[in-house]
Amino acid sequence: MVERKRAAALKYESNYDAPVVTAAGMGYVADKILEEAEKNEVPVVYNKELAELLTNVDVGSNIPEELYNAVAEVIAYVMDIDRLTD
Image (spheres, rainbow, N blue to C red):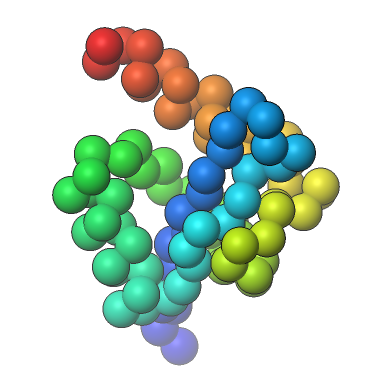
């Protein structure tokens, strides 16, 4: 069985209780999420296991508490990239 590509987009602001899933999908939808990220110069982090979990969260919902640590690592990584490119 061939695995389908999965992707999820997150948004986080300091006043949020938790990051919000703004897009999630598999296959064609995942490709479109990645295209939009590239077009808008949004950093992409490749993590198969996390993507699989995030694609099961409803779009518009906060991430579940059990994903806080994993997502915090991604946010910290993206913030480091932002600092290095400014």
